[in-house]
Image 1 (cartoon, rainbow, N blue to C red):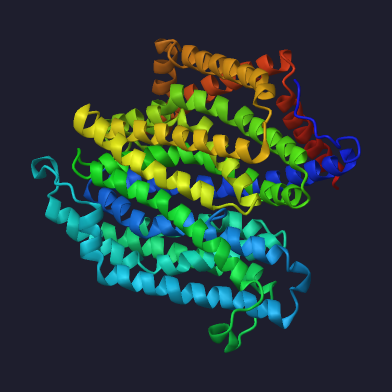
Image 2 (tube, rainbow, N blue to C red):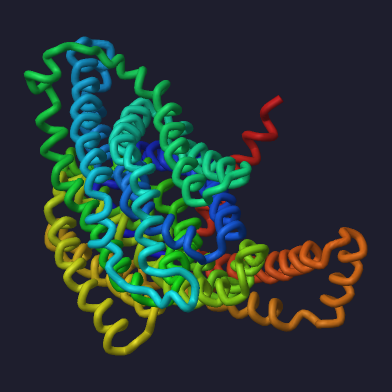
Length: 566
């Protein structure tokens, strides 16, 4: 497979190999920690789903969470505006980390963030009724479950409980940025698991109000996320002084200059979510919860791949841009992008084939009905193709940030929200596609974003070597198609007598039909998916796909290291 070769490849070969090893090591660590957090989040969703189904409490929580909790995820997470701005500024000042001036800068970042975001949280608490009615305007059919008034009261109650998350989000983001500055990736990556654990605990504890339990668990979880950032934040030696309120510390101006457009860009993404809510609020009950659950299933592999790659690749992009090594930048971009696609495409194929079975396995119990499964599966089927474009979009956005250009992604995001409003209206009001229309619009808007980012990046850097990626991409797509086909043929053609035999014997063993059925379904999904991945790997091996070799070399190196340890 041909690559985009840097002009100074021979002179920098050793340096590139060193950066590649460092990137691979950090990618692996962040991927592992993020994986743990994502599975904790999956456990949280299972507990919420089986406890509340897609009814009033779940719908209200997902609406309320979008106003408060989403801010914690987008603004407080790795890659968010607080994290990105703090990391970018502090990286250049790392050697001065023990000086008083740098300590004052960190304290000023935290103090100003706490005050500004705290005021926003207070306003959200006070004006919660008006905010909720603006974001969730649709009326529901009370004969099918709950009334519009019931939903309004429940959402307002939960929003007010979770309002402090808005302030916590900023501090968590800065904490992540400080920790990453000192190559501390464990706590930022694992922190979301504490939030998920708190929610699970509060839901499972005896309670009389499910909505309050969910909201309190989310708030306590956010506080936990902040608490685990403290060790990393202390490495920057924050130093309190009254000067932080009266004088901009060295580096604060750069922080604000970068932070403001990043915030607007991230906010646009939140606004797109609010547009979706507005259209969904008037559709079938449980519709928004179905969209949220399907999106979380998509975000499970996405979050692991994108977060694990963006955290280590950002500084590498920035280093090449600063040094003016645009060819090296393109080389790293191509390598990161094809590696992401190599991992993401077979996962997408399996989600398309096994999505409904996975939802049934994870959620269908207690309050979660077969109808709930069908609602989520219909959305998941349309959202899954988005994965291919999503990973590329986020990676290209990171290149713009390396150029300290946040205006271009922001301008594209502004255009995207206008297009999203039109697409939602078209698919909901004209074509009557229901929640599937929201999912289709989401996938199309991701393609829209990626197309414009590619266009403007090509103008900025010149040809990106897209032609060189066609051959490996075709191999990956063909291999993923075989992966999905293999999984489908096995999953839907396992002899029924064998399934009945296993179910009958497992029922006798465990004394519960639902346990036996879950085990049989798990085996079905596991065998079919494993066979599909095996075919994908073999196909890529036969066609000598370089990305397979890179992954295999990394796994082999890890195994050698593990065996060498006493």
